[in-house]
Length: 483
Image 1: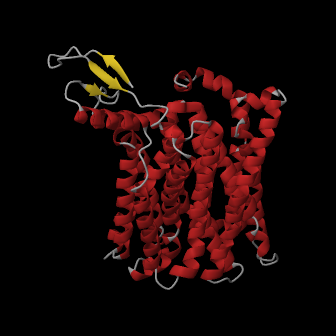
Image 2: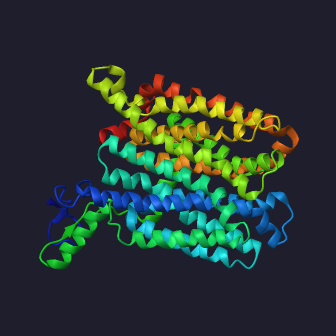
């Protein structure tokens, strides 16, 4: 499709014709179900591998420290915190770059960076070099976090399908994170380098898969189409809307980097959603040290057996999907019956976060006060089941609410949430040794529970006042007009 646009510059000899993507044939919304599934699964594999890498080497931090003769406890856990530091910076850069170069080129280059850095970790000559490699691996691994929501929005126009895809990838990220300690106990216990061998092997598979993923970002597809048209004809000046955007990449990066900070500082929905997601994410990372401490110290388990303590969290993650689907069916039936509440944006997912918040608090108190020799080890271990459900319900609900509320600005809103959770996820575990050593298991875990109690009202607040907040938000209103 072509539209005429006049160029008054001195170098223009004719009117420019703007190329628009053929929505009936070429638009990503029109991809076949098989093609959409391939795109979703491949990008999901990138996400899974990234989160697996965040936790898998963490289990071997003690052995890595022993190999490089690192004795300071805070330095030992830098193997995880440096990776998360890359998670903080990456989304701010890669989200706007995906809109400049396209989703495929960005994911292909960053997955290549992730593979190379993971490979370099295997042959690290020093602890400092290993930390540098981990930082850049974290940057490369953070790209799917900042782009996957945009990819799903590109191929799934229906909020229901997009919400299901978002729920699936959220669960995939959780599974990747919680499987790390379990895999380490049985695969990499005797040799810490095997952790990175496994990550690098999966990264290579994902990179090859990305080679066959089509571009999904419409402005870039239009730019490609215009370029091909210019190559095939010499008598017309054909351009895309993106070609007319004269902003440089540096300006785009500056604007897009500033926007997540602005949203976090001025938008109540973004601020409180980011805070809640950050706490939930940080608690999971605290568990990577707390679980081994609890089940080895109190119950005398070895490294292999204590890694199995994370399985209930994984089971809770699996249970989350049918719960989300059941709620969707219930809401659809209520809409068909003409129930007004079911049509409101806030009721699309937020009630799930209300349930998740209560389960989160219960699971933390359960773990903290049953981790005693007077209780069988299965009792505190099973607290992971409601925690796994709560973790995913909160993240799925709030991520979807951010996406639905901020539309074209959702990438920036999600980038703000991603940076916040990575910052807290990197910082809070630094205090875990002091907490559990000085306060004991019960009170140290209860502090996390009290923080979770303080944030329980967040989804209820959004349900009650969300429409008014969105009405007053310039970003939400601008996004609404673009729908």
